[in-house]
Structure formats: C-alpha cells, structure tokens
Image (tube, rainbow, N blue to C red; front, side):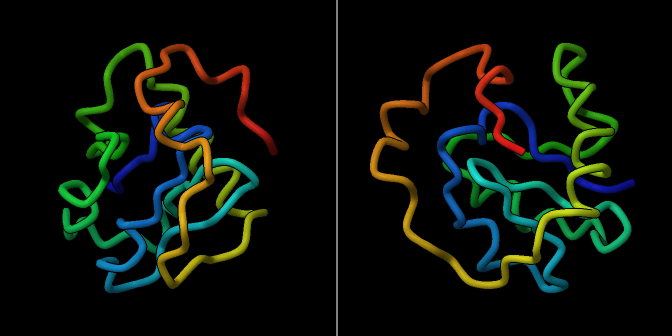
Length: 107
C-alpha cells in the first residue's frame, strides 16, 4: 500500500513532505506533487509534514478523492523526482482552503 497525494496539494505544492521522505518517492509537477507508488515504502513520515493534509494511506483516501490513487501512479511515471524542499508558490496560502481544485491540475 502506498501513500497518495490528493487534491489539497494542487496550487499549494508545499514541499515539507519531500524533506522527510527516506526513499525519494515524490515527483514534482507544475502545481502539485505526487507519490510514486512503486517507490513509496509506507513509512508515514510525510503525512504529518503536509500543512494542507493532502497525503493519505491508499486505503484511507476519501471516496471523493479516490481518482488521485490512479493519478499519482500515472503522473509519477512522467514527472521528475523532487528530493529537496523548495519554497511554496507565492499564492499557496491563498489556495489552502479552496475546495474542488482538480480543474486547476496542470500536467
């Protein structure tokens, strides 16, 4: 079972989770991160580090966010690894509480 980055990460892209990942399983897209399910070792360290609570164990992903399980697997094949924390986008705090952000996902 891998961990999954869900919709809350879109347009926020805080990278606190990247710093604690022992296996470098995060991949960086234009406006969110995803987890490579083949690399994730289920250590749970990233969950507590995410300031927008976007990361879930695969079995715990909310029903409305289940499509992100497949999206993480798909996008992690194309997006490059991110191994160091970066500054969040300047408008990340404005996007924190926004709901229904999937339409803003940039591939």
